[in-house]
Length: 116
Length: 108
Figure 1 (tube, each protein chain N blue to C red):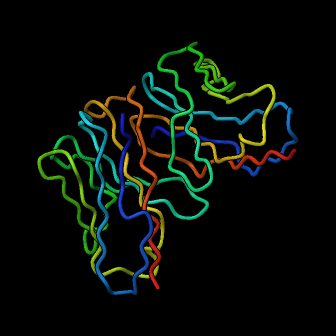
Figure 2: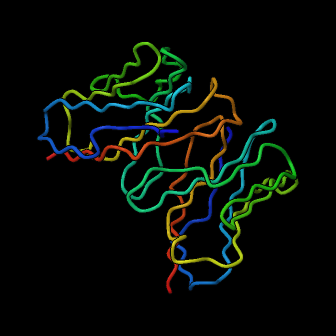
């Protein structure tokens, strides 16, 4: 079974440029998460989807960040414009059902963003 | 609110030493408890979990017992290997919050 796929793995951009990250969750997983992980820190949830609906986006900085999950499968996270402080690893995860507390999250390898 | 408190690191051990990484939680109800591990350059992956009191999760020689009386889920391994060097995260599921993790370094 294929795991969570993310692309690109690495991205270097200049500040004020836009950037987008793509995630393909494990087949059949209804719940999809985007996390931000700064160096030496644990992941911080940005947004959680159940199917195509964003059920928790309270931590997403909506002035510059946006996300979508069309058709309830793949998802894209966008930053426009990027700032220096956005340099981090962006992790995507998925889980089988609708956010049940017993669900294991399966993480992708992440996209490491560097903003110059 | 619900939260976990995880032992701060870093932890440095010699190969074959005994490992304990403490994790205590505060929660209403009956949360599920998880340990995730992040190897260098990789994403997080589930190490083990327990979904009810007195359950013991185990994997790769690691164990953790869900103890409701002490609200703890300490991670233990009897003999660590160099390949166990990683960052370990205790997670109180349902809240989707991870602490900063505990960095474990094992020397030959």
